[in-house]
Image (cartoon, rainbow, N blue to C red):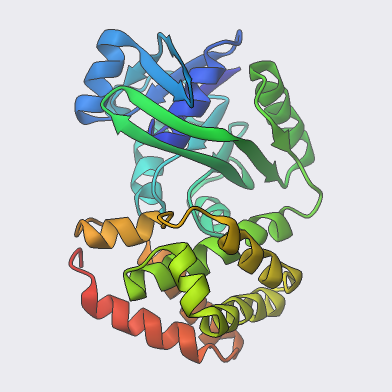
Length: 296
C-alpha cells in the first residue's frame, strides 16, 4: 500500500517513522527546518530512555506524485482543508482518507470535500516535536482508533498491525471519537480561560469543570451519542495528571499562535445552537476567549 502521512509533528512523525519499518511505501509531508532535517538525517524518535532514527521519504506537499492508497492527515484541524486541497490531485475514489486532527467533525469535513473513502478516527499519544527532525514520545500510550467503512478499516488495520502500532476499529466509531473529544474540549477551554494547568483547574474549579463536561455530553446526546459516563472518567483522569500538564490550545494562546479554539470550543457552541441545547458556560467562555485570541 502507498501511504501518505500529511504532517510530521508529534503524531504524524511517530506514525510515519513506524510505518517505514513495513513493506508499505510511506511518504511524509512537512515543511520548514523540520523537513530539511528529516531529509538530511532521517527522523529521530525519542521514547523515554530510548531513541531511534529511520530514513523517511519526506517532502513538501507540492512535491507529491502518483496516487496514494491511504492518506493520514496529522495536521491541526484548521489546516485540514488546505492540506486536503494540496494532496487531492494524488488520490482517487478508492483512496482511504483519515484525519487524526483534534475534533469530531473532521470526517464530515473530508466527506464534504472528497469522493474518496473517508474513515473517522482519533489517536491517543503523548508526543511533540522536540526540535527540527526530532519527535519526543512520552510513556507507552499509543492507540489509533478508526472506523466507518468496514473494508477500508480492515485494510488500514493491517497497515498498523504490520507496523506494530496498537489500534482499535470499533463498530461505534462516533462514540469513541466523542470520548476523546469531551476531555480535550473541556480542558482546553478551561486551561486557556484560566491560564492554568489541567490539575489546577480540576482542583480549584471542579464544579465548573463538571458543568462544562456535562454541556459537551448534552450536545453529543443531541447528536445521538451517549457519553455521560465519560464526565466522571474525565474528572478522574484530570486528578491524576502531573501538576504542570496543560493543553496545546492553552500553550498556543500563551505563545500567541494560531489555535484550535473553533474546533474545541466554538464547535460546541454552534452545534448547541443548531440542536437547541443549552450550553451557557461554554458560550460565555468561548466569547471571552475569542476576545483574547491574538491569532484572529
